[in-house]
Image 1 (tube, rainbow, N blue to C red):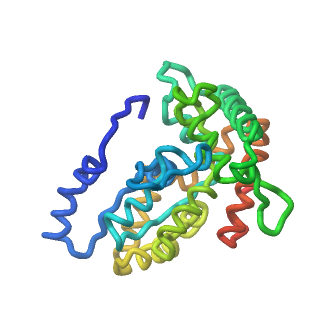
Image 2 (image 1 turned 90 degrees about the horizontal axis):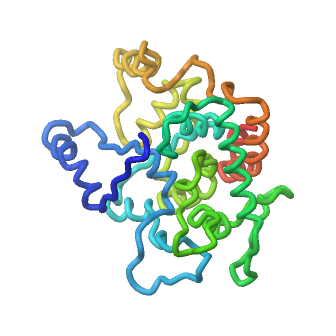
Length: 293
């Protein structure tokens, strides 16, 4: 939380799991060892430099992402299972904005400051995506299957997300670092395509809406996905209470949706921005439920 950042190596990351892994092996053979960091999915393209001659044309892919995060995970843990729970984009973005302090300044956050931050972010990103594009870099925009709408190509998207609007590439920084309200993090389609290509059937995707509306059914399918036994009839109430108990369990079930807390013009702005990406996501998942707007 806040702006404090520490750069860790992959070895440092693995060290976090050493104690839990040893305990699981020695004492608990029926439990799964997990990492629930949202950044694992959101920053999947900010990976590791590849070894060998995998040079790409400048602008086609991030200079630091020739090896993607899911590839590293699958290489380290071939039998790993992944579960992705996707939240309605505006609600996720507002929660992110209220929780993190990316500016490093003591600023009171309100629906008005959220609107201002979103307006700046959407304008900046849209301008970058529509800016000059070399013909040798491939298509700038691609059509959504089965429709006339288009979304930026992956190369165009990564160009803007990784380098923002900096004119001097040497001093360019990822857009999520530049912006107080990283609207791009609620665009799921690009990262999901990468994770699906690497994990295949080892990836299970669910919506938070479905989890909240039927926790038992959703969790049952996830237990099966990761290879855990189904809870007994006496265990299910305890699991459900972890979500619906007095502390909320972080689930916010029955509480006011974050998207209901934003201004109407903010919701309209973000709905229009996310709509084509959500449509592409719904087509990719073959599920219209991902068309949140």
